[in-house]
Image (cartoon, rainbow, N blue to C red; front, side, top):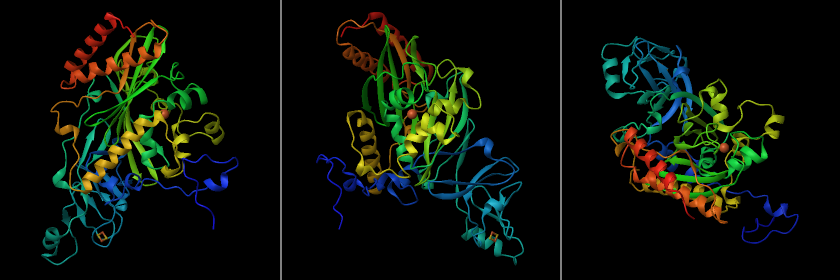
Length: 453
Ligand code: FES
Ligand SMILES: [Fe+2]
Protein backbone atom coordinates (compact mmCIF):
# COMPACT_ATOMS: atom_id res chain seq x y z
CA UNK A 1 0.00 0.00 0.00
CA UNK A 2 1.19 3.49 -0.81
CA UNK A 3 2.75 5.47 2.05
CA UNK A 4 0.86 8.43 3.48
CA UNK A 5 1.94 11.92 2.38
CA UNK A 6 4.95 13.09 4.38
CA UNK A 7 4.15 15.40 7.30
CA UNK A 8 4.65 19.06 6.41
CA UNK A 9 7.38 19.43 9.06
CA UNK A 10 9.69 16.88 7.37
CA UNK A 11 11.65 18.25 4.42
CA UNK A 12 10.67 16.47 1.25
CA UNK A 13 13.30 14.64 -0.74
CA UNK A 14 13.97 15.73 -4.31
CA UNK A 15 11.51 14.34 -6.85
CA UNK A 16 9.07 13.60 -4.05
CA UNK A 17 5.89 13.85 -6.12
CA UNK A 18 4.91 10.32 -5.21
CA UNK A 19 4.59 11.25 -1.53
CA UNK A 20 2.64 14.42 -2.17
CA UNK A 21 -0.26 13.24 -4.27
CA UNK A 22 -2.67 13.64 -1.39
CA UNK A 23 -5.56 13.66 -1.25
CA UNK A 24 -5.61 16.59 1.12
CA UNK A 25 -8.64 17.76 3.03
CA UNK A 26 -10.55 21.02 3.12
CA UNK A 27 -11.95 22.65 6.23
CA UNK A 28 -15.49 21.40 5.80
CA UNK A 29 -16.82 23.50 8.70
CA UNK A 30 -16.20 26.53 6.47
CA UNK A 31 -16.45 25.24 2.93
CA UNK A 32 -19.87 23.54 3.17
CA UNK A 33 -22.72 26.01 2.85
CA UNK A 34 -25.94 24.04 2.42
CA UNK A 35 -28.80 24.09 4.96
CA UNK A 36 -27.72 22.71 8.31
CA UNK A 37 -23.95 23.03 7.75
CA UNK A 38 -21.97 25.20 10.22
CA UNK A 39 -20.90 27.87 7.70
CA UNK A 40 -24.20 27.64 5.85
CA UNK A 41 -26.09 28.41 9.03
CA UNK A 42 -23.73 31.28 9.88
CA UNK A 43 -24.13 32.90 6.47
CA UNK A 44 -27.90 32.52 6.75
CA UNK A 45 -27.88 34.80 9.81
CA UNK A 46 -26.92 37.80 7.63
CA UNK A 47 -28.58 39.62 4.76
CA UNK A 48 -26.97 38.43 1.54
CA UNK A 49 -27.22 39.89 -1.97
CA UNK A 50 -28.73 37.31 -4.30
CA UNK A 51 -29.10 39.13 -7.64
CA UNK A 52 -28.94 42.47 -9.37
CA UNK A 53 -32.29 44.23 -9.50
CA UNK A 54 -32.11 44.68 -13.25
CA UNK A 55 -31.91 40.91 -13.70
CA UNK A 56 -35.54 40.55 -12.65
CA UNK A 57 -37.70 40.65 -15.75
CA UNK A 58 -41.28 39.69 -16.61
CA UNK A 59 -40.55 36.00 -16.09
CA UNK A 60 -39.47 34.32 -12.87
CA UNK A 61 -35.73 33.78 -12.61
CA UNK A 62 -34.13 30.60 -11.31
CA UNK A 63 -31.21 31.30 -9.00
CA UNK A 64 -29.10 29.21 -6.64
CA UNK A 65 -27.82 30.57 -3.34
CA UNK A 66 -26.22 28.67 -0.43
CA UNK A 67 -27.03 25.39 -2.14
CA UNK A 68 -30.75 26.19 -2.45
CA UNK A 69 -32.59 26.42 -5.77
CA UNK A 70 -34.81 29.48 -5.58
CA UNK A 71 -37.06 31.52 -7.82
CA UNK A 72 -36.81 35.29 -7.85
CA UNK A 73 -39.71 37.24 -9.33
CA UNK A 74 -41.44 40.59 -9.37
CA UNK A 75 -45.23 40.50 -9.43
CA UNK A 76 -47.22 42.99 -11.51
CA UNK A 77 -47.74 45.26 -8.52
CA UNK A 78 -43.94 45.57 -8.17
CA UNK A 79 -43.37 43.34 -5.15
CA UNK A 80 -40.20 41.25 -5.36
CA UNK A 81 -40.42 37.68 -4.10
CA UNK A 82 -37.79 34.99 -3.45
CA UNK A 83 -39.32 31.56 -3.01
CA UNK A 84 -38.35 27.92 -3.09
CA UNK A 85 -38.18 26.53 -6.57
CA UNK A 86 -40.62 23.67 -6.13
CA UNK A 87 -44.35 24.13 -5.72
CA UNK A 88 -45.69 22.56 -2.53
CA UNK A 89 -48.51 20.87 -4.48
CA UNK A 90 -46.66 18.34 -6.65
CA UNK A 91 -43.25 19.97 -6.95
CA UNK A 92 -43.41 21.65 -10.35
CA UNK A 93 -40.76 24.34 -10.72
CA UNK A 94 -42.00 27.89 -10.23
CA UNK A 95 -39.41 29.12 -12.75
CA UNK A 96 -42.10 28.15 -15.29
CA UNK A 97 -44.80 30.01 -13.38
CA UNK A 98 -46.32 33.38 -14.20
CA UNK A 99 -46.03 36.67 -12.37
CA UNK A 100 -49.54 37.83 -11.43
CA UNK A 101 -50.87 41.13 -10.15
CA UNK A 102 -50.17 39.72 -6.73
CA UNK A 103 -47.77 36.80 -6.37
CA UNK A 104 -46.59 33.94 -8.57
CA UNK A 105 -48.77 31.23 -10.14
CA UNK A 106 -47.56 27.67 -10.67
CA UNK A 107 -47.72 26.51 -14.29
CA UNK A 108 -48.98 23.00 -13.52
CA UNK A 109 -52.33 23.39 -11.68
CA UNK A 110 -52.48 27.13 -11.18
CA UNK A 111 -51.90 27.51 -7.47
CA UNK A 112 -51.13 31.14 -6.65
CA UNK A 113 -48.65 32.18 -3.95
CA UNK A 114 -47.93 35.55 -2.38
CA UNK A 115 -44.34 36.79 -2.05
CA UNK A 116 -44.30 35.67 1.59
CA UNK A 117 -45.31 32.13 0.60
CA UNK A 118 -49.01 32.40 1.50
CA UNK A 119 -51.32 30.23 -0.63
CA UNK A 120 -53.67 32.73 -2.29
CA UNK A 121 -55.61 30.52 -4.73
CA UNK A 122 -56.12 26.80 -5.26
CA UNK A 123 -58.32 26.71 -8.36
CA UNK A 124 -60.61 23.85 -9.43
CA UNK A 125 -61.16 22.34 -5.97
CA UNK A 126 -64.31 21.82 -3.90
CA UNK A 127 -65.35 24.57 -1.49
CA UNK A 128 -63.30 24.69 1.66
CA UNK A 129 -60.16 23.10 0.23
CA UNK A 130 -58.47 26.43 -0.42
CA UNK A 131 -59.05 27.69 3.12
CA UNK A 132 -57.84 24.44 4.56
CA UNK A 133 -54.67 24.50 2.49
CA UNK A 134 -54.04 28.14 3.31
CA UNK A 135 -53.99 27.21 6.97
CA UNK A 136 -51.67 24.24 6.60
CA UNK A 137 -49.40 24.82 3.57
CA UNK A 138 -46.95 27.55 2.67
CA UNK A 139 -44.46 27.92 -0.11
CA UNK A 140 -40.95 28.47 1.30
CA UNK A 141 -40.13 32.18 0.97
CA UNK A 142 -37.51 34.65 2.16
CA UNK A 143 -37.77 38.39 2.88
CA UNK A 144 -36.00 40.57 0.33
CA UNK A 145 -34.79 44.13 0.14
CA UNK A 146 -33.92 46.08 -2.98
CA UNK A 147 -31.05 48.45 -2.21
CA UNK A 148 -29.05 50.46 -4.73
CA UNK A 149 -29.64 47.96 -7.52
CA UNK A 150 -28.90 44.78 -5.59
CA UNK A 151 -31.57 42.43 -4.22
CA UNK A 152 -30.75 41.16 -0.75
CA UNK A 153 -32.39 38.25 1.03
CA UNK A 154 -32.42 36.97 4.56
CA UNK A 155 -32.45 33.16 4.52
CA UNK A 156 -32.18 32.44 8.26
CA UNK A 157 -34.79 31.72 10.95
CA UNK A 158 -37.59 34.31 10.50
CA UNK A 159 -37.68 35.33 14.17
CA UNK A 160 -33.95 36.18 14.10
CA UNK A 161 -34.00 38.46 11.05
CA UNK A 162 -31.50 41.27 11.76
CA UNK A 163 -31.79 44.92 10.77
CA UNK A 164 -30.56 45.63 7.26
CA UNK A 165 -27.01 47.00 7.49
CA UNK A 166 -26.10 50.17 5.60
CA UNK A 167 -22.35 50.76 5.51
CA UNK A 168 -20.92 54.29 5.59
CA UNK A 169 -19.10 53.76 2.28
CA UNK A 170 -22.47 53.27 0.57
CA UNK A 171 -23.88 56.61 1.68
CA UNK A 172 -21.27 59.03 0.38
CA UNK A 173 -22.91 62.05 -1.24
CA UNK A 174 -22.28 62.37 -4.99
CA UNK A 175 -20.68 58.93 -5.20
CA UNK A 176 -22.00 56.71 -8.01
CA UNK A 177 -22.63 53.04 -7.17
CA UNK A 178 -22.71 50.58 -10.06
CA UNK A 179 -23.87 47.02 -9.26
CA UNK A 180 -21.94 44.13 -10.75
CA UNK A 181 -21.50 40.40 -10.44
CA UNK A 182 -18.18 38.52 -10.45
CA UNK A 183 -18.42 34.77 -10.98
CA UNK A 184 -15.89 32.34 -9.49
CA UNK A 185 -16.07 28.64 -10.28
CA UNK A 186 -14.80 27.53 -6.90
CA UNK A 187 -15.62 27.52 -3.21
CA UNK A 188 -16.44 30.83 -1.54
CA UNK A 189 -13.73 30.67 1.12
CA UNK A 190 -10.83 30.78 -1.34
CA UNK A 191 -12.39 33.86 -2.94
CA UNK A 192 -12.92 35.50 0.45
CA UNK A 193 -9.32 34.81 1.55
CA UNK A 194 -7.94 37.32 -0.97
CA UNK A 195 -9.23 40.35 0.93
CA UNK A 196 -6.88 39.62 3.85
CA UNK A 197 -4.00 38.72 1.54
CA UNK A 198 -2.63 42.19 0.72
CA UNK A 199 0.68 40.85 -0.59
CA UNK A 200 -1.00 39.20 -3.58
CA UNK A 201 -1.58 42.61 -5.16
CA UNK A 202 2.20 43.08 -5.45
CA UNK A 203 2.68 39.78 -7.25
CA UNK A 204 -0.46 38.61 -9.04
CA UNK A 205 -1.69 42.11 -9.92
CA UNK A 206 1.65 43.72 -10.68
CA UNK A 207 4.92 41.80 -10.97
CA UNK A 208 3.54 38.55 -12.43
CA UNK A 209 0.77 39.84 -14.68
CA UNK A 210 0.88 43.21 -16.31
CA UNK A 211 0.32 46.18 -14.00
CA UNK A 212 -3.40 45.56 -13.51
CA UNK A 213 -4.13 48.45 -11.16
CA UNK A 214 -2.29 51.71 -10.58
CA UNK A 215 1.48 52.03 -10.40
CA UNK A 216 2.87 51.41 -6.96
CA UNK A 217 1.11 48.09 -6.28
CA UNK A 218 4.30 46.24 -7.22
CA UNK A 219 6.16 47.30 -4.10
CA UNK A 220 5.86 44.91 -1.19
CA UNK A 221 4.77 47.06 1.70
CA UNK A 222 4.69 46.68 5.46
CA UNK A 223 1.63 44.67 6.45
CA UNK A 224 -0.30 44.53 9.68
CA UNK A 225 -3.58 42.87 10.62
CA UNK A 226 -6.15 44.00 13.17
CA UNK A 227 -9.02 42.04 14.64
CA UNK A 228 -12.12 44.10 15.47
CA UNK A 229 -15.52 43.29 16.93
CA UNK A 230 -17.12 42.82 13.51
CA UNK A 231 -14.22 41.85 11.31
CA UNK A 232 -10.62 42.20 10.25
CA UNK A 233 -8.45 44.88 8.76
CA UNK A 234 -5.22 44.42 6.81
CA UNK A 235 -3.02 47.46 6.24
CA UNK A 236 -0.30 47.61 3.64
CA UNK A 237 1.92 50.70 3.70
CA UNK A 238 4.29 51.51 0.87
CA UNK A 239 6.92 54.15 0.22
CA UNK A 240 6.20 56.27 -2.89
CA UNK A 241 8.77 59.11 -3.12
CA UNK A 242 8.20 61.38 -0.14
CA UNK A 243 4.78 59.83 0.50
CA UNK A 244 3.58 56.87 2.50
CA UNK A 245 0.59 55.12 0.98
CA UNK A 246 -1.52 53.19 3.48
CA UNK A 247 -3.98 50.86 1.81
CA UNK A 248 -6.61 49.35 4.07
CA UNK A 249 -8.41 46.13 3.21
CA UNK A 250 -11.35 45.03 5.29
CA UNK A 251 -13.53 42.01 5.96
CA UNK A 252 -16.80 42.63 7.77
CA UNK A 253 -17.78 39.20 9.01
CA UNK A 254 -18.84 36.92 7.65
CA UNK A 255 -18.45 37.84 3.94
CA UNK A 256 -18.58 41.58 3.15
CA UNK A 257 -15.31 43.04 1.85
CA UNK A 258 -13.89 46.48 1.14
CA UNK A 259 -10.50 47.68 -0.06
CA UNK A 260 -8.94 50.88 -1.31
CA UNK A 261 -9.11 52.26 -4.82
CA UNK A 262 -8.01 50.20 -7.79
CA UNK A 263 -7.05 53.18 -9.93
CA UNK A 264 -7.50 56.40 -7.95
CA UNK A 265 -4.61 55.88 -5.57
CA UNK A 266 -1.02 55.11 -6.48
CA UNK A 267 0.71 56.85 -3.63
CA UNK A 268 1.88 59.83 -5.66
CA UNK A 269 -0.99 62.17 -4.73
CA UNK A 270 -2.20 63.09 -1.24
CA UNK A 271 -5.36 61.25 -0.20
CA UNK A 272 -7.09 61.57 3.12
CA UNK A 273 -9.44 58.73 4.05
CA UNK A 274 -10.27 57.70 0.49
CA UNK A 275 -12.84 54.92 0.62
CA UNK A 276 -13.42 51.62 -1.06
CA UNK A 277 -13.70 51.39 -4.84
CA UNK A 278 -15.57 48.11 -4.60
CA UNK A 279 -17.97 47.01 -1.92
CA UNK A 280 -18.72 43.34 -2.26
CA UNK A 281 -20.22 40.26 -0.71
CA UNK A 282 -18.64 36.91 -1.47
CA UNK A 283 -21.79 34.81 -1.76
CA UNK A 284 -21.71 31.02 -2.15
CA UNK A 285 -23.94 29.67 -4.90
CA UNK A 286 -23.21 26.25 -3.44
CA UNK A 287 -20.08 24.44 -2.21
CA UNK A 288 -18.50 24.55 -5.68
CA UNK A 289 -19.54 27.94 -7.05
CA UNK A 290 -19.41 31.53 -5.87
CA UNK A 291 -20.53 34.93 -7.01
CA UNK A 292 -19.42 38.29 -5.72
CA UNK A 293 -22.33 40.71 -5.80
CA UNK A 294 -21.03 44.19 -5.41
CA UNK A 295 -20.93 47.84 -6.34
CA UNK A 296 -18.09 49.61 -8.05
CA UNK A 297 -17.88 53.03 -6.38
CA UNK A 298 -17.08 56.06 -8.51
CA UNK A 299 -16.35 59.54 -7.22
CA UNK A 300 -13.76 61.59 -5.40
CA UNK A 301 -13.42 59.03 -2.63
CA UNK A 302 -13.75 55.91 -4.81
CA UNK A 303 -12.38 55.27 -8.29
CA UNK A 304 -12.41 57.87 -11.12
CA UNK A 305 -15.62 58.29 -13.15
CA UNK A 306 -13.69 57.49 -16.34
CA UNK A 307 -13.71 53.83 -15.21
CA UNK A 308 -17.51 53.83 -15.10
CA UNK A 309 -17.68 51.83 -18.33
CA UNK A 310 -19.21 48.41 -19.10
CA UNK A 311 -15.92 46.68 -18.26
CA UNK A 312 -14.88 49.12 -15.48
CA UNK A 313 -16.29 47.11 -12.54
CA UNK A 314 -14.53 43.98 -13.81
CA UNK A 315 -11.23 45.84 -13.96
CA UNK A 316 -11.76 47.19 -10.45
CA UNK A 317 -12.69 43.73 -9.16
CA UNK A 318 -9.67 41.87 -10.50
CA UNK A 319 -7.67 43.99 -12.93
CA UNK A 320 -8.90 42.09 -16.00
CA UNK A 321 -12.23 41.42 -17.68
CA UNK A 322 -13.80 38.13 -16.68
CA UNK A 323 -14.40 36.48 -20.06
CA UNK A 324 -11.01 35.92 -21.70
CA UNK A 325 -9.31 33.37 -23.93
CA UNK A 326 -7.30 30.73 -22.06
CA UNK A 327 -4.02 31.97 -23.51
CA UNK A 328 -4.63 35.48 -22.18
CA UNK A 329 -5.64 34.10 -18.80
CA UNK A 330 -2.31 32.24 -18.69
CA UNK A 331 -0.33 35.27 -19.76
CA UNK A 332 -2.10 37.74 -17.48
CA UNK A 333 -3.69 35.79 -14.64
CA UNK A 334 -5.97 37.64 -12.20
CA UNK A 335 -8.01 36.64 -9.13
CA UNK A 336 -10.28 34.24 -11.03
CA UNK A 337 -7.27 32.28 -12.30
CA UNK A 338 -5.58 32.30 -8.88
CA UNK A 339 -8.70 31.19 -6.98
CA UNK A 340 -10.20 28.76 -9.48
CA UNK A 341 -6.77 27.25 -10.18
CA UNK A 342 -6.70 25.93 -6.60
CA UNK A 343 -9.41 23.47 -7.57
CA UNK A 344 -13.10 23.56 -6.84
CA UNK A 345 -12.54 23.32 -3.11
CA UNK A 346 -8.95 23.89 -2.09
CA UNK A 347 -7.15 21.32 0.05
CA UNK A 348 -6.32 23.27 3.18
CA UNK A 349 -4.24 20.45 4.65
CA UNK A 350 -1.74 20.82 1.79
CA UNK A 351 -1.17 24.55 2.28
CA UNK A 352 2.08 25.91 3.78
CA UNK A 353 1.13 29.22 5.37
CA UNK A 354 3.65 32.03 6.03
CA UNK A 355 3.58 35.29 8.05
CA UNK A 356 1.85 37.27 5.27
CA UNK A 357 -1.04 34.77 5.53
CA UNK A 358 -1.68 35.85 9.12
CA UNK A 359 -4.85 37.75 8.25
CA UNK A 360 -6.29 34.72 6.48
CA UNK A 361 -5.50 32.47 9.41
CA UNK A 362 -7.11 34.91 11.87
CA UNK A 363 -10.26 35.28 9.77
CA UNK A 364 -10.71 31.55 9.12
CA UNK A 365 -10.24 30.86 12.83
CA UNK A 366 -12.84 33.47 13.78
CA UNK A 367 -15.34 32.28 11.17
CA UNK A 368 -14.92 28.73 12.47
CA UNK A 369 -15.42 29.95 16.05
CA UNK A 370 -18.56 31.87 15.07
CA UNK A 371 -19.94 28.83 13.27
CA UNK A 372 -19.16 26.61 16.26
CA UNK A 373 -20.70 29.11 18.69
CA UNK A 374 -23.83 29.17 16.56
CA UNK A 375 -23.98 25.37 16.60
CA UNK A 376 -23.78 25.65 20.38
CA UNK A 377 -26.62 28.17 20.47
CA UNK A 378 -24.86 31.57 20.47
CA UNK A 379 -26.11 33.86 17.72
CA UNK A 380 -23.48 36.05 15.95
CA UNK A 381 -23.28 39.80 16.53
CA UNK A 382 -24.63 41.87 13.71
CA UNK A 383 -23.27 45.28 12.71
CA UNK A 384 -26.67 46.85 12.10
CA UNK A 385 -27.75 46.20 15.69
CA UNK A 386 -24.96 48.45 17.00
CA UNK A 387 -25.37 51.64 14.98
CA UNK A 388 -28.55 53.50 14.23
CA UNK A 389 -26.90 55.33 11.30
CA UNK A 390 -24.53 54.04 8.63
CA UNK A 391 -22.12 51.43 10.03
CA UNK A 392 -18.57 52.85 10.27
CA UNK A 393 -16.01 50.88 8.23
CA UNK A 394 -12.33 51.23 7.32
CA UNK A 395 -11.54 50.03 3.81
CA UNK A 396 -9.79 52.72 1.75
CA UNK A 397 -6.55 54.57 1.11
CA UNK A 398 -4.65 57.33 2.82
CA UNK A 399 -1.53 58.92 1.32
CA UNK A 400 0.46 61.25 3.56
CA UNK A 401 3.67 63.16 2.96
CA UNK A 402 6.20 61.52 5.28
CA UNK A 403 9.73 61.70 3.81
CA UNK A 404 12.19 58.98 4.79
CA UNK A 405 14.31 60.26 7.66
CA UNK A 406 16.47 57.35 8.74
CA UNK A 407 17.88 54.16 7.31
CA UNK A 408 15.03 52.26 8.87
CA UNK A 409 12.29 53.49 6.57
CA UNK A 410 10.34 50.26 7.07
CA UNK A 411 9.80 51.30 10.69
CA UNK A 412 8.41 54.63 9.48
CA UNK A 413 6.03 52.81 7.14
CA UNK A 414 4.76 50.77 10.07
CA UNK A 415 4.44 53.85 12.30
CA UNK A 416 2.46 55.80 9.73
CA UNK A 417 0.06 52.90 9.13
CA UNK A 418 -0.42 52.44 12.86
CA UNK A 419 -1.12 56.15 13.37
CA UNK A 420 -3.58 56.19 10.46
CA UNK A 421 -5.51 53.28 11.95
CA UNK A 422 -5.48 54.75 15.47
CA UNK A 423 -7.08 57.89 14.08
CA UNK A 424 -9.83 55.79 12.47
CA UNK A 425 -10.35 53.69 15.59
CA UNK A 426 -10.65 56.87 17.70
CA UNK A 427 -13.58 57.94 15.52
CA UNK A 428 -15.44 54.66 15.43
CA UNK A 429 -18.23 55.84 17.69
CA UNK A 430 -19.05 58.41 15.00
CA UNK A 431 -20.56 57.91 11.61
CA UNK A 432 -21.25 59.73 8.36
CA UNK A 433 -19.87 63.22 7.79
CA UNK A 434 -19.00 63.69 11.46
CA UNK A 435 -16.63 60.71 11.34
CA UNK A 436 -15.18 61.72 7.98
CA UNK A 437 -14.46 65.24 9.19
CA UNK A 438 -12.77 64.08 12.38
CA UNK A 439 -10.63 61.48 10.60
CA UNK A 440 -9.59 63.76 7.76
CA UNK A 441 -8.70 66.64 10.12
CA UNK A 442 -6.65 64.30 12.31
CA UNK A 443 -4.81 62.85 9.30
CA UNK A 444 -3.91 66.32 8.06
CA UNK A 445 -2.77 67.29 11.55
CA UNK A 446 -0.65 64.14 11.79
CA UNK A 447 0.97 64.94 8.46
CA UNK A 448 1.62 68.55 9.46
CA UNK A 449 3.32 67.47 12.70
CA UNK A 450 5.68 65.18 10.78
CA UNK A 451 6.91 61.74 11.72
CA UNK A 452 10.00 60.55 13.48
CA UNK A 453 10.97 56.92 13.37
S1 FES B 1 -47.54 21.37 -8.93
FE1 FES B 1 -47.87 23.44 -8.64
S2 FES B 1 -49.99 23.69 -8.70
FE2 FES B 1 -49.66 21.58 -8.93
FE1 LIG C 1 -6.87 40.42 -6.16
